[in-house]
Amino acid sequence: MVAESPSRVEPAQPNVPKHIAIIMDGNGRWAQRKHLPRTAGHHAGERNIHRILRACVDRGVEMLTVYAFSTENWGRPQPEVNALMALFEDASERETRNLHKNGVKVCHVGTMYGVSPQLQRSIQKAVETTRHNTRITLNVAFNYGGRAEIVDAIKRIVADGVTPDEIDESLISRYLYTATLPDPDLVIRTAGEMRLSNFLIWQAAYSEYYSTPTLWPDFSKDDLDAAIESYAARHRKFGKL
Ligand code: IPE
Ligand code: IPE
Ligand code: MG
Image (cartoon, rainbow, N blue to C red; front, top):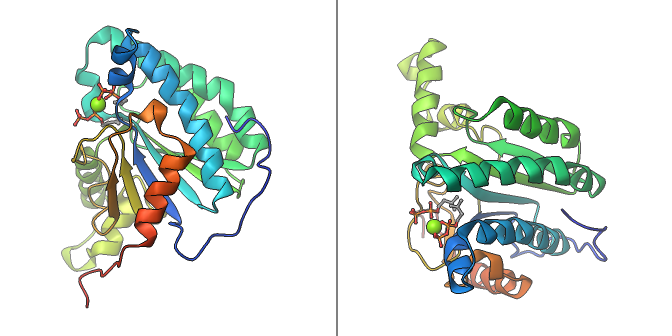
């Protein structure tokens, strides 16, 4: 994934978001514009994760979360779903060593429900192998849906016999797939849509949003810098004055 060690790692600048989350949208349109099958767009999109992850390291970003497959994406035509599953398996087998070598900690955010046992094992291996790495954390939101996450959390809260007066925002956060992860500071969506599509609906309550028409496979380091620059100029108020 990160082909070689970054040439320069800068300490986080005061206004660089510590945690960036990206809705990587537009792979299909990217391919269509090139008269290629949609799958070619997904492959190009996967390659771009490595470029942007490396750029995040260089800029001192501590955590990158990428929305790779939503619980609603199962509803796509079966050949596309199959191709995506094959790509995820190939990518996790192919990239774990590289990620590990480059100090990347990989986390899975989502559910294994409906995922083939083989792919589950690949994901677990990537997470297990890289768990002590500290250079940057890459959270892969795979088979993730914000509503499903809240439903799962409520089920486990009830099953654990939690009483109503024990329930507060921090308890709910701990029951989400993201449990101990910090909330994203900046949510970027590529390909121009202005919606969350069920992404981190609880965690992004006070995140800053940035949308760009650039399609995900074309999203470059310069686009990342533009997003970070926009973030740096914002005044986060969290409901206060
Ligand atoms: C995002 O690209 C990748 C996934 C949802 C898996 P799309 O496949 O949604 O691309 P568009 O939106 O059709 O262009
Ligand atoms: C969101 O993109 C999901 C991912 C990027 C994985 P979609 O393409 O699925 O979202 P909608 O359908 O445009 O809302
Ligand atoms: Mg899309």
